[in-house]
Image 1 (tube, helix red, strand yellow):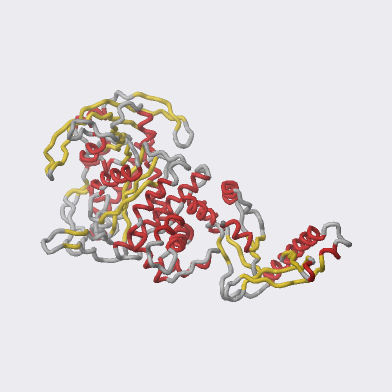
Image 2 (cartoon, rainbow, N blue to C red; image 1 turned 120 degrees about the vertical axis):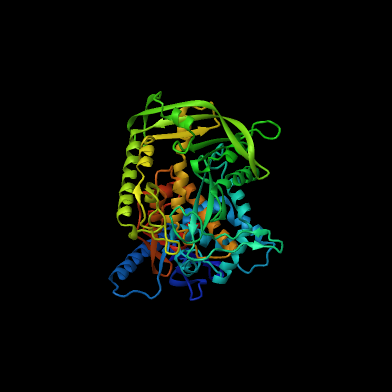
Length: 585
């Protein structure tokens, strides 16, 4: 309720208490609650009638809200339709608008004959992916949980996925262009890693082949080496992240394709589209190949060194004997450093500049031999050695049980332990372990024990210190955490769409959601983990008391930090719809 002043008889100002409300169609209307009188007459009784009655309206509203609250608490019946709304998504909406998605999609939609709003659909998909992840159908059915109105059909939502697929490259570029300065993003070092996502189907997608047998388009969902050891078809994702911890770009590739060949295309494309001059690519040892190394820092056809750099993990167990002998030689330097927990620890390390011979592939032949001068670094940690020993002992116990009870295991359940067993084989159809001359591979166990606690990193950046290299490489944890967020918090898998275009659009919304979440973490000075932020945003919801009045029942440290970042007051217990709309705008 509020005070309304409007011209009355002969233009004289008349005051009355008016209430705003919405009819059954959602249209805003107002009704007069109480007539007060003409302003000139009221001035004889009050020094400032307008101020007096405005305060009076405020008092009446507060009393009325208290009455409604008590009424709701005392009520023994629940309404059939839920009146609870989430407002926590406003923080996500602020960043979404800051990036400029709405303006971008508005321009794109001018050339499309669509009866629905692409931006509205993308908003619902992104906000729901972060706060209430589910299938597209369930996302649509739950759209009323937000204050924003999403006026489109479920069919419109599915149709929009084709358009989002066509815009995925431009949207990634939009994110970079509109965040690189405002968030001081640093792409001089970038992190790359791959993961995979499963689909709840039993078959592989077929490749699209022309009449001459040439593959026009590879099927996406393919059975391949799953990081979770699942039998279902998967697709792979390669994610490139900047030094700030914010995703730069991503690629999808068929589940049966090696991740080793995915690094070069995404780095080349991202640098070109984003105008990045040079980047040091940091990746785990699985991506440390001769071709990737040469692409980043080898000599090109003009005998000039390629412009970029690399920092790779390096397997010591899988290295040549010369490298292994050098790595195990006891000539380490011992320094005292502070670990992740703030404890002072002794750190053993050494490094060398070494001319490594590599074979690179040209014209589909791996015949070109060249030298790569790289800095090779080895460090030793007793804590890491203890961890490796403990993990191996658990697997060895499993291997011993498998040898004793082979009928309990098959190809899938024997993963890990099978590597320590001699003569292991499986029945062709069932995959069950065949009980024939099984024994523990003692030689392999002794060989592995020699390398416990050692780790190696190789880099093109020969002028960096051992500690600088180590600190750069340690940043890989954040990209691994990003994959964890998409899988655990965003529930990006299993995937419930099946066409290539819809799969691409699904992961585009996951990527946008991840970017927004990382930017919000950054705004909060990386003080909170994304999972705890999401829980607070979900809890910052309210219940409708009556008409346009809402009761808020949650407020915590994270919400308080968010209100400071966006300069809004979120501590009110009661808000009307007009005040809520103001927060959302």
